[in-house]
Image (cartoon, rainbow, N blue to C red):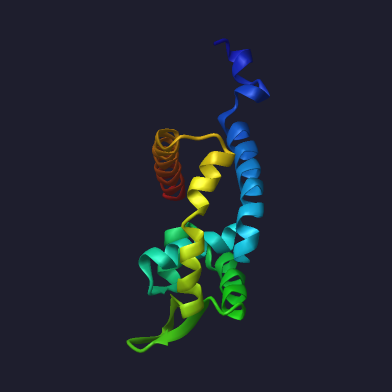
Length: 152
């Protein structure tokens, strides 16, 4: 590939990822609407269903979200009765987040989401696994590059 070709918009990985991200998140909307969740709220619930109880810091790290982005998501989920936030008795500065009974029960409906999304996105299980492996490598490399840059 020539250097000039490398600058073509359609050849940019970042462009493909940006368009794919918007398209995929948009495709989730009709699937998540019956659950009463937005895509970011769904990600929070996935983390809590798997790892709760979590501190706000742990949840922020798990989701790769800064606390300023996570806080309004948690407020909306708490207002909807899906999570609770309590002070950590061992460290009063820390908040512990867990699902309520209603939030835990929502998991039974959410279990259908991954299969439905693979169908909507025309992905086999193997496609999804391979894509996730590539994305994980990219995330790790990008995280390392950010860390390296911040050390200068």
